[in-house]
Length: 389
Image (cartoon, rainbow, N blue to C red; front, side, top):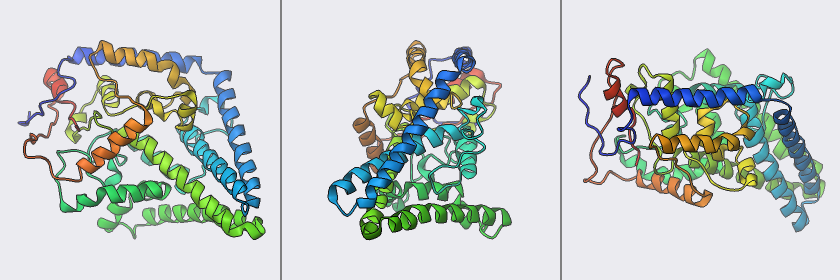
């Protein structure tokens, strides 16, 4: 085992390897039970949400035909923003996860759905479903962790360029869908390594370009033109609706991955990772948002981010059902279930972005925790997690 220097805080030091594997078996049992019970109620739920979203979008766009009048502008803009949030969060994100593939409906299926977003569905599924959910909060492996533009852990070397990360995080929030498209392309990495001329990258970049053109044509050309004399006000309304959607989506994602108390992990900590250890990493690397049923729907049920990371293929409407059981497991195994109201979680995530834009305080212990080999299960358990706080 490589010599390591551990942080003072180790949230799983009290767990044995046997504890972790038993935890994994209990979570498997919850997942299997819900998978076996999927049926018409789940199908009816997603169909109802899709119908509601489409009616809201069409109605809002109709109102915006008269956006020259301020009341119509306000109502149409807010309605369109809510419709776009619903489409991206509760519908697009969850359908593309394959949560409703069991319905065998070709119109509501992860292989056929294309969402109201500039990132093509196929590229997003690769970067999100395959990479993010496999390597959740693993530094250098999970592109969602800071989107490659932010310092997200004290163990990451500080550079003066990080002083600007609150600003570019704000810019990323305002144009979040474009930021997601760029990171789905791994744009920065491919440019740095000179891969931008590779045929595969160019093909993917062309796909993103086509999707951006379609989205731009729909939102900023066709719909405003249909508004006639209300062209400019409809253009402004659509831009505002997209801005609201981007800020909301960014805030929800930040709350799920970046508040204080969420852990990050070294690459070595997942070498030979067991099923139980994977589950534990999801539990430690995620945070929830407390709130009403309406808030849960508007977040795409990513307010149950812990449950989503444990069970990404379960229908999103079932997360509220399993959350009490998951929370009870946290308590039984002596783990902290990180949750809080939306304002609290947003403030916590932003404070972390600001705090990590500055150099570490001299009193903070330098520590990079990596995992020992699978042959040393107890020591591996003690070294699995690294604290981000």
